[in-house]
Amino acid sequence: MLDSFTETLDGINFEYTKISYNLSEYETEELFLLLRETEPDLILTLGPGSSRIVSEKIIETPVVFSMLNFPRELNIIDDLIRPGGNVTGVTLDIPPAVQFEILAEALPHIEKIGIAYNPENTGRTVEEAEEALLEAGLGAVTETVKEPRDLSRALDNLKEKGADIIWTLPDRSLYFDASIRRVLLFSLRNRIPVTGYSKNFVSSGAFMGIYPDYGSVGQKTAETVLRIMEGEHPGEIPVYFTDKPMISFNRRAIATIGNYVAEEVLQRAEEIIE
Image 1 (cartoon, rainbow, N blue to C red):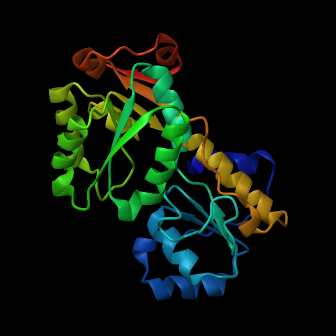
Image 2 (image 1 turned 135 degrees about the horizontal axis):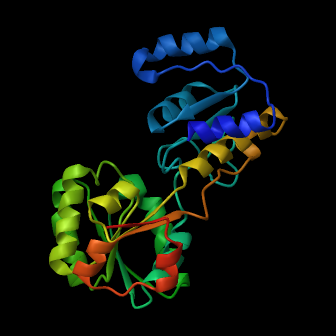
């Protein structure tokens, strides 16, 4: 991401001075003292931790966030179209409607999408997903999961409700290494495909993955920075999210689960993992 960010700025000969701070190396108050002394024209934050802290403490200097999911749920912004205040940025989120269009094209026989989620972390996203599925003529079956130990129960309930595929969200409090293994084992045992939110998820055994292109994320982050440095107010710049995600498939999962995948989608996949 940072390579494409730098290349975009260097490509137009934009002159700037970069001062980097690693949040883990400073106490919060020490970091903000350094920021006040530096008096930057703009602050770029990477990841949810630094983005949330800086957006809470800095109310005048423009802030651009990147490399995070769910900025509304993190209370970094209130609205994706008009963020307001001094903050905007680039999210790793891919609109549910875009993802479901890909799923419907890749697996034209599916009718019900199963979603296990924590409403405190991704409730707004799931509401939008249900609306997108309704518009696409697909059904949604959902299960709320407030503790990771309840995920297996939720998956069994989704199966009983007739889910044709399990759609996962990048909520690290719910989906981490141990719980992802449980999801993939459920998928293989029940022959219900799982769509993951990263290439690593697919490499681990998910049927397919839909995830952002980090090069594009870096480019769009640089473009957002440039718009602000040229005079636009950050609160008036919509948050960017990709509408052209990367797609990959796991050939072994396809063979094991036995689902038909449309050939044209396979052909435009970035990778078929063997």
